[in-house]
Image 1 (cartoon, one colour):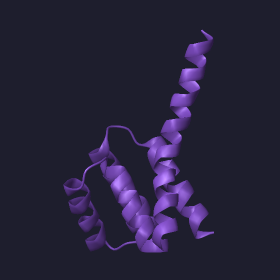
Image 2 (tube, helix red, strand yellow; image 1 turned 180 degrees about the vertical axis):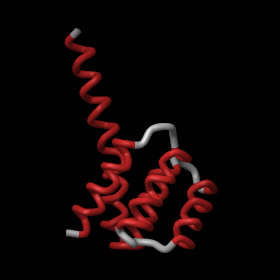
Image 3 (cartoon, rainbow, N blue to C red; image 1 turned 45 degrees about the vertical axis):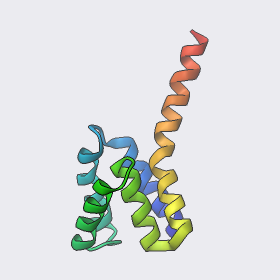
Image 4 (cartoon, rainbow, N blue to C red; image 1 turned 180 degrees about the horizontal axis):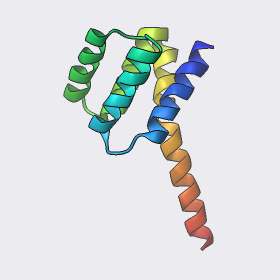
Amino acid sequence: MLYLDMLFTFMKISLFSFGGGYAILAMIQQEIVLKHHWLTQAEFQDIVAISQMTPGPIAINAATFVGYRQAGFWGSLVCTLGVITPSILVMLGISISYARL
């Protein structure tokens, strides 16, 4: 149940937040710290610092860290897939529509 909750939470974050990595941080904080209590505020601040230092998008780095803290390797995989799946599905839909036109 935790895996599904993490997957759908990060899919929602990815699907409904616009404006890049820094804009998505507010929604991640709302969901992870305030709603689900998966991390404390101090741990979230550590995520922001670590995500800025490591290569790659901030949202993916943050999702991977949250998943790892909650459920180890499989949790990090589920959360990372939750962040990238909506973008992949939207781009797939646009590509198929474009190819048909």
